Image 1 (cartoon, rainbow, N blue to C red):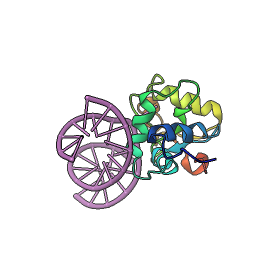
Image 2 (image 1 turned 60 degrees about the vertical axis):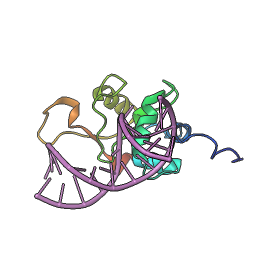
Image 3 (image 1 turned 135 degrees about the horizontal axis):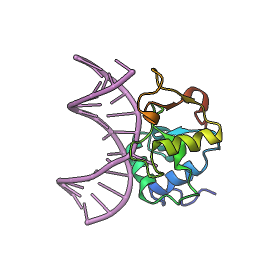
Image 4 (image 1 turned 90 degrees about the vertical axis):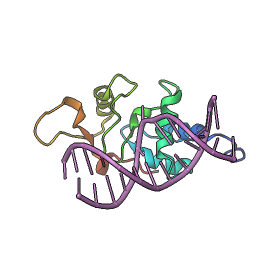
Length: 118
DNA sequence: TTTTTGACATGTG
DNA sequence: TCACATGCCAAAA
């Protein structure tokens, strides 16, 4: 089974991990990095996902910051778009503290409830 | 081989 | 709670 796992680049491994994230669950960049074999390469995870993720195949919208927030200039069309996608899958979001400041910017994923467990 | 670059993580103030 | 600075790692040039 595992024969050329180490031959594939780190980015390729990242795609494999992200693809395994079940619907309605989210993972952090650090978590994906750890599952890919590099617990400290969380930065590269984001770089790999933005490089050329097969649209529609790799659910990169299920990867968020450890804080529960997401990248500002997201490639899906904005953080709002990502929040809509996750909410549609059943992911629980926590609204901003004071009602509604800057739209989706304050919204964060409830990692305590929706964190994906490998 | 060295430098540069990132959709990060963590620690302080 | 937020803002800023530092550390980390892997890939491309």
